[in-house]
Image (tube, rainbow, N blue to C red):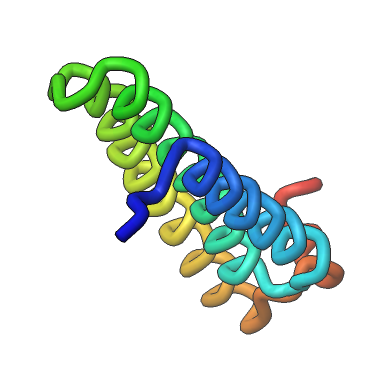
Length: 104
């Protein structure tokens, strides 16, 4: 059975990135936009892991940076969700078009 090569992982990462960009450009809900940004960050982390695996083999050192990306993304998601909860309590809506509270 054929094992997936670097090209397979790069195609998967590009597909995830495009899905994230599509979601970011087409969604009006702020939570859906946050999920799209998380998909984009995961596509970048997948690239790091794939390049390290095919360049350095089984060494565990190359997965440190993707773990850092995931940790920062989790912290960013927590902060953004806290802001979105406050925005929802204030305006009762999470639509991008009507959310101009942070502008003033």
